[in-house]
Length: 264
Image (tube, rainbow, N blue to C red; front, top):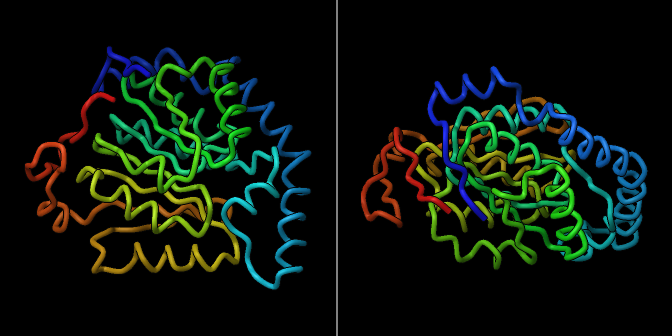
């Protein structure tokens, strides 16, 4: 995986916007449209399998069992959510994005399109199912965005345990029961200006707990919720808390005006 070099800062963003965004190109839109068509045929049957299994057990299903019930369903964010991710990435100008829950790569393509337009940055994304990871890699390649994307296969608590680079944007969209655990795992690597973006689900107890977690003043986050679909929760560190944090990579207090990340 390489980090793109080239334009940076506000002038670079203006240059890329003037040329048209990568997200709007025919190549990228063709892949996104293909994934939406797959979702139209696969998502509802997958959700029905999950509901039937939960009714049989009398309890929620998570992890490998839920993932298997999802089969090849994209279960992706909506186009509106994808555009939000693109816009947030352009605004943050991240050196490194970490995505929990690749699925078939729909959200990954939005992130990578923004990185292409910024001219720098990379993304590590993790997927539990090997088949989905393989299909995601193909979709990202078909969109022409493989150069900044690293797809890791396995449980996120293992695949993200060895992060050695600071993280500017964390996206949570994997197994509902692991949102807090993944955040706690990545937390020491978050830069002072990092965004944590979490895609919510309706009537999900673990997501209710996640909301409580990031809205708890003792956690040191400033949090808002954007009313797209079931909600997208966006958090950043309270500057008063962030000032006292130390970057593991540098051993120095982080500055909210610097990226805090090295090339990945």
